[in-house]
Image (tube, rainbow, N blue to C red; front, side):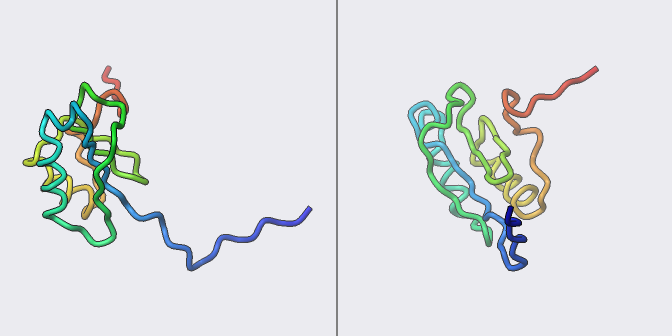
Length: 108
């Protein structure tokens, strides 16, 4: 059986992408302004895209960062600077904005 090839040393990690829902309920809750706020603060190596429904309509506007798989909920334009500085530039996701349906926490 042939061995699988070793991963290439030159392979690039998957680029980050910020997906901002632009579907009905998120739009009604201000997601267009959230998308504009992200576009106004570009970060090297990070793509910002409008997305269709991400299935979290009752907690919108929804922002998802891939490949990190961090889901933010009820994001307002005023939250964007924190996400940009702390998560996208600093590597530490903003836990206060996590979607609790996806990022569950247990307290004892």
